[in-house]
Image 1 (tube, one colour):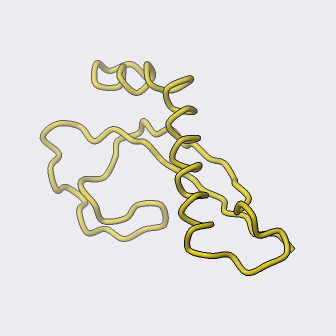
Image 2: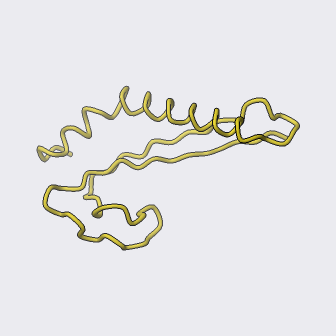
Image 3: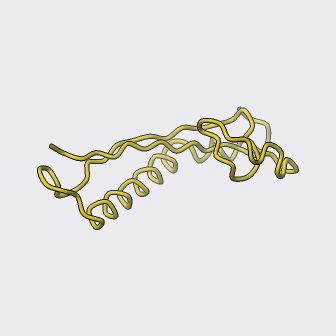
Length: 94
């Protein structure tokens, strides 16, 4: 048996001046951290197998290594395909 971690990251634009509007609204995919995002949202996703635990119990170090790989993957995805799109949201571009 192997262990796998699936991950999803939503990047959304929270317009200036919206402040805490919607703060505290608990909905799926909208944790209460800041204002509610506008219509523009990018979803990045992936999956990583937990290294070195194909048939054993995973360790904290195994998960730490996997989470580091996840962060690197999300950063690469965002910089390669989404950075310009997200930067343009603040000027009204979809």
